[in-house]
Length: 201
Length: 203
Image 1 (cartoon, rainbow over the protein chains, first blue to last red):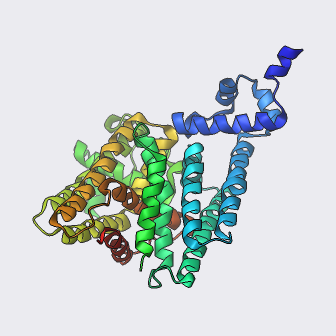
Image 2: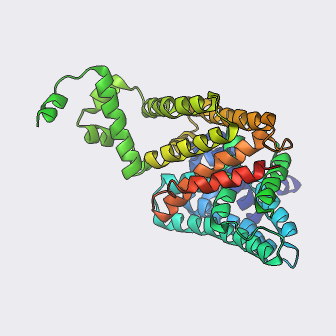
């Protein structure tokens, strides 16, 4: 009795485990390797058990993307509207994003390979929203800082936002190509410093 | 008219390989990477699947050959710019604009290939892409270092980190263009990027 309890995870825990394993397969072995059969094998459950939690692989992927909306995008929205100085929000914004994506390696890969690989309208729509929200909240912080009078008002906010959006992408490539030497804390500090320098009057 | 006749004749390997690569490029940029199959490639270049197989043993091998062409055309130029005798600021200007022009011409091709490489976790493609990415970073680092040594730029800037920031820009432009179904931001955007980089480098 006690023994079965040890391995028996709650539905919630099992779902988390499934999603974590998916991201790990994507990051370490490539999306192509991701079959429900292989996934079930890495978790140590049957494919049938897997399908009790999610009806399809597609549903699992959608679950992960939903997590990104709930855990990353929602949090970024909160950070952007905090009642704090723009500089402090900017720091939190950049570091939260980098830490989240570093913890959940495989997410960026999932987001941008799925988007360019599968020309699926529905999925692409959700990802486009995720991308645009990140830009929108970032731009809000920048505009607030300019309004506060601390940053350069001649900055083209749209272009700076595009520059910012390159950061998660470049981090993704760095972690794929040079994971051994990549230090995400250092990376985060450097990027924040650069953005602040662009913004300086 | 004559051209059509010639193409159907037996062609030297080099010509055939170019034909096949062009067919793959057309599929990648017009239809999307998920449409890349032996069947579609054969249809696109009017050759049999077997004939293609004689030139390339795998689809990854075709993509690899495309990456190598890319490397030769762009990296050679970036290297010349990096090693030229001009001031660091001038070289930075040329470096960024050359890359952006190339990017516009290639419609995000390198991103597509990178997607494919990470999708399949292809050792062949990743190991071909890695030095290209690293070299571009290395050249840019050199220009930044030179500028710091010249005394024109801020010496506390990490050339490595700034190159990383820079390398993300072309990619995010591609992704955005993909979402918006539009052409990437045009050539003028390179001026804006350059002004950001220069501001970061300023003392």
